[in-house]
Image 1 (cartoon, one colour):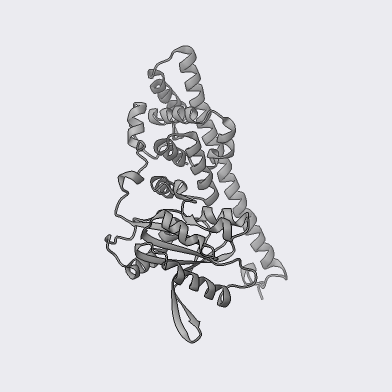
Image 2 (cartoon, rainbow, N blue to C red):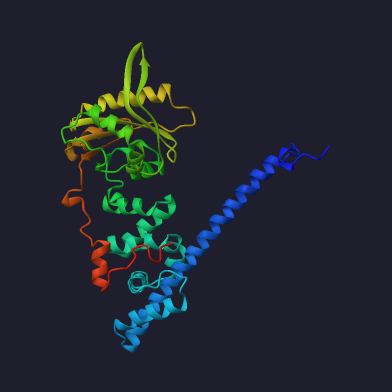
Length: 353
């Protein structure tokens, strides 16, 4: 009788757990290796850009030298992408944008080259670029998500909702809760008309829950829509229920397709009480309420929240097919910056990691 293949032989005790651990180690090592390669390439591009800047300033070299350098580098490294004239101009702009090599190594070097080109094209100040770079690294944003977050000014809208968290939640949780809410929320992915009612908006948000979660921000987990509550034998239904993983609490979201009215908080407060008593566990924090309305008078909202003993926030939502002028960055596109730098790339992915 021949021996059975090793794959058909029952593994020894502990082998399966060991194999799973090895797979995790290998995946981790692969990710670290890829990050290290990316970091070295981005740092190389920064160094080349810095050298171009310094030599042009010191030697008085004109733009022609970049074209010559592109030809010579591609001749020397025919199998290596990234040495087009356009990409060398990007390297120069990249070095000009980041004077500190430490930031390149610690933050922007953790992003692919294409992400860095988005920051250059879409944002004007180092502070803005660094803020979006840090968030992109923290949450693993893809290039398209980074572009969308910049175009919708997601960081600028954070912490802008009218709330009573400072008075109703203990620090530092109150600060984190405040930063977790935005104003306004932009629902440009729903394809709804401006006169859509609450149920239509609610249904569309659930159908596009991935984009909705991205718009809500990091930490939100979807629990359910029209969540049923039995209070004293009467039926009630919460529009949308979420759980916030960082705040460790439930978040009740109520939609109003009209202007905010103080009486809206009465219904929201009732739902918060019901969730606190029937749904949350002893390990969860106080349930938070977010009222999303079509418009609001900020002073009226502040007055209404001052009378509430429960943690609530009020923010507007906007239904749109594209961003209105006041919400656009007004910053140059990738094509515009290419023209300003004096070249259009032969391949927009040239040099992408």
